[in-house]
Image (cartoon, rainbow, N blue to C red; front, side, top):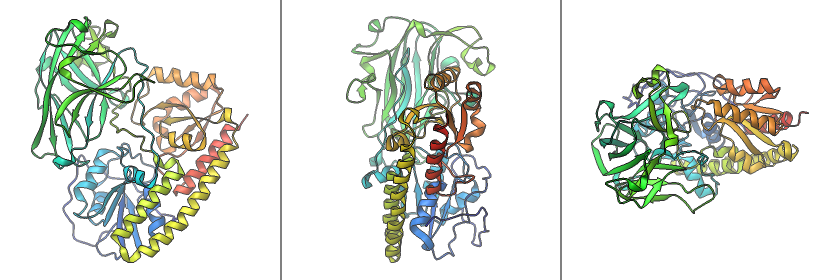
Length: 527
C-alpha cells in the first residue's frame, strides 16, 4: 500500500492570500509533490517532512491531498521553507509536524503563523506518547574539565498564551567585575555568534539570546580578568514574535574567575557549580530565573534548580586560554591575549529539546504516529472515518511485518559487529529497538562543525572496535568530509543510510527502513 510520488508543482488557480513568513524566505527545491488548493474536495494536509507525508498518504489514501514543506533530500534541521511552499499552509485542513525541535524553527513558525484558525496542528513526536510511543531523553556530555554552561527555557508558558512559535528573550542588563565578559556560540564552520559582550557596554536590547519554549543552547563564556563577576539578567516572553513582551523575572548570576568561589563577595554561597552541565534558565511557568544543573553522570535523580543569589559558577585557572589568531574572534580582544573560557564543548548552533526527536527509526513508534494520524483525520473528516481506519489497519499490518523483517535482518549480524558509526546522532531508536550498538558519530547534530577531538575520537573508535564500515546519510555528504577521510585512512567502507529524508532508491518509509536494515546487514558482515 505504499504511495509513490513524482517531483513537480502544479500552479495555484486561486487568489493569492497574504502569507506571514517568519524569517528569511528562500526559493525551495523540488521534492514536495503538488500543492494544496481551496478547490480540491479532498482533505488538504501539510506535513513538515517527506517521512510524515508518506505516513499520512498511506492512512488518507484518495481522500487526502498531502504535501511536505521540506523536500526530499533536504535536511529538516536546517531547511528554510520557500514562499511557494508556505502558501500550502494557508489551504491546509490539518498540519503534521514531528517537532521535539527536530525541524528548523522557521518551518514551525511558518505553520503556526499561516494555518487557518481551528485547524488541527499536530506535533507527532509529543502526541504519539499517548499511543505508546517510547522516547529517548537526550543525554549531554559530562566528561568536561570545566562546567559546561548554556541557556535554557523551562516550561511552555501555556497559561500566558505561549506556543511553540513564541520567543523567550534572555538579556544581560548589567555587569560588575574586574574585566569584560563575552558569551557567544560557534556556528557551523566556526562562525561565532555573540550574545553578550560587555566590551562595548551591556545593553538589554542588544545583549540578548532568543530561544523557543522548551529549548536550550550551548555557549562559550569568556572573562578577560581574574576576579568575581556579577551578571544581571532579565527574561521576557513574546507570545507572538514582534509582539509586546511579558516580564518573566530578573536575577544576578555570580562567577568566580580564577579565585576561590567560596570567598565570592556579595553572595551567600551555598552551592558551587564547578563541572558537568548547567544552564542559566528561565522558568516561564513560574516567572523566574534560576540555575539548572544536571547531576553528575550516574548520580542523582534528575536536574536540580538552584537560586542564583546563593550559587557561584566557578571558572577555574585551568580555563585560562589564549585568544586565537583567527580574525573572526577579534571581538574577544587581541590574538594571544590570555582569557578565561568556559568552552561550548559542542560546536555549532545546536538548539534542541529534551528528547531525541528521531522516533520513527523504531517501527513501533511509527505505528504510534500512524494511529495518531488516523484519529486526527477522522476528527477532520468524519465521513471518511471507515476509510481511514481501514487504511490504517492495513498499513499497520505492513509496519508490523516490517518491524519483524528489520529485527530479523539485523539479528543476522553477529553481535560483536552490530555497531553503527554515522554522520550525526540520529539512530538511537534504531539501536535500542533492534540491538545495534551506537558506537559513534561525527557530531551530535548535522549543523555542528566537527573538531580535531571529534576526529581523534572517531579514528580511535573505528580502530579499537575493528569496525568494517561507517554509514553516511546521502543528503549530508557535503558535510561528511571528516567521516569519509577517516574511513579512507583506515581502509573502512563507507555505506549509505537514510535518516531524516528520502532520496535515491528510497521513496517511502517502508523502503527507508528496509534499505537501512539491508545496508547494515551487508556492510557489517563484510570480512
